[in-house]
Image 1 (cartoon, rainbow, N blue to C red):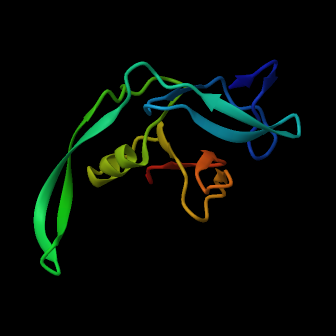
Image 2: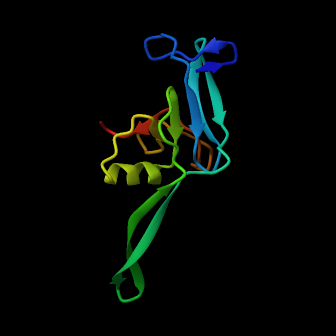
Length: 139
């Protein structure tokens, strides 16, 4: 992947192969990367049609007789492109989780890592503004 005139480097300072990253979420995704020894923010604009997973909610009862409890099940995953050479697809954590529940092992699908130990970059209100790592499906 090239950023400007410089190749993006891997953890061992080797150039990454030519790679295309497609943002299949409905919003821009920013991530931090070190390029030429300098931290930089890179923003991936979304593809025109986002990848989504259908959900269905099932009533599970009530807490104290007045707070509903529901269980969600995942249905069809829509608009996830088929694998292409040297292409990585960024999807939502929900889509990645649905793929995992199906037993998928696609190495070309990742989601922004926003957990408390993922070093996401947050603003003064605690909202994620960029990520420093992506989650993937385990092989």
